[in-house]
Amino acid sequence: YTQAKSLVFSKFGEPSDVLHLHTHSISPTLPDGAVLLRALAVPVNPSDVNTIQGTYGVKPSFSPLLGTPEPSAIPGNEGCFEVVAVGPHVKTLRRGDWAIPATTGFGTFRTHAVAPDADRTVLPIHDTAGLTPAQVATVSVNPCSAYRMLRDYVDLIGQSVAAYSRDPSTPGGAWFLQNGANSGVGRAAIQLGALWGLRSINVVRERATPEATDALKAELTALGATVVLTEAEFLDRAFTTRLRDEFTRGGRDPLLLGLNCVGGKSASAVVKALSPKGVMVTYGGMSRQSFPFPTGPLIFKRLRFEGFWLSEWSKENPAEKKKTIEEIVELMRQGKFQAAPVQEVKWDWETDEKTLQEAVQGTLEGFRSGKGLFVF
Ligand code: NDP
Image (cartoon, rainbow, N blue to C red; front, side, top):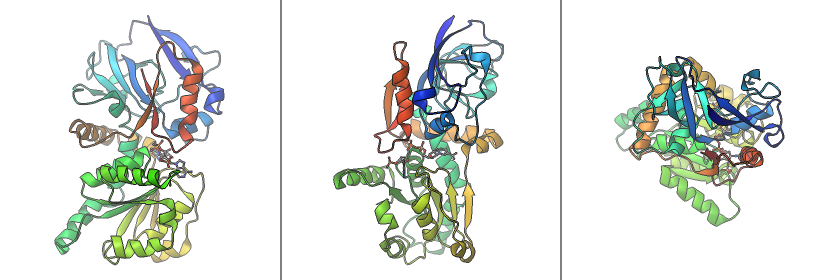
């Protein structure tokens, strides 16, 4: 029998109140199509906390199968696992492969997992050379979301090519604008955009000192950001003039895509900056503030407002999801794509419940040096 530990919750609430560490054993006899996985690295994303709080778009079902006193669920949507045993009918995985859950909702906050129907429920990585568990653990949510949002709403790459063929003096690719640019999604969008020849305007929150703000701007610029602004600079009246004169050649280079991670005033400023027929894609609400749909711009600029939700997109497009992940993993292997910074939390047999609870609870605090990552 394999001894395993999982973080579980039986009711919604703050992670420090409702998360518990549950110990159980896993039978050595695997169902035919299943694999036994051992966790290597598992990140804590904002949506995991929202799921535990009960405020997320999908509620987990609490199950008696885990053997907890009350029916419970395991949070966590992504991670990097190692395949340690393979059921007799499994075709796509071998012992020693790394594996990523194919869809969200897998329940990754655990040391071990039995994945039933493994050919469909997990994606294998046979050749792990050049990859780290931390990279692989964080590829399927943030980079995948950034990739789809940059590609599925406006054909920015096509726009870049068309602009260049009309006017070879065009200085660079098509623009996009994003707030929350220091988030995992934001950093991924910066890098993918740069790899695809796009230009980006990136909005971040000011740090405690001007030096720290400059250091953050320099870091994002090194990742491939064209312009990095603080929220204050973005919300300032002068931004409209800068956008027109400094960045878009008097408005000749349109701004057709805005990615909204934050909501509130920042989202309204994204709307204001968009060119006619531009699209704002909202995927997060980190400020917990809503924003008005302004009537004038909506009509006269004929704007589009879209919402992106990776979970639903993945369910509707499983093959595309797999391809997107494989493409980004390949970029990582080639050293062309850096994972977002993480704060590692060691999870071994001795780690107590409180340490793990706190690692989850701290996720929404902001101004962090990196996303929480359980390493095993
Ligand atoms: P990270 O944990 O990597 O980063 C969180 C970011 O949010 C930080 O950059 C932080 O800024 C910023 N932030 C926190 N509080 C505020 C605030 N009050 N105002 C402005 N910014 C704030 O986040 P992820 O990249 O994992 O996720 C970012 C958002 O995207 C979340 O809302 C998440 O739920 C959502 N998301 C949605 C997906 C979807 O399918 N719709 C998929 C993936 C993510 P700072 O650096 O200044 O601390």
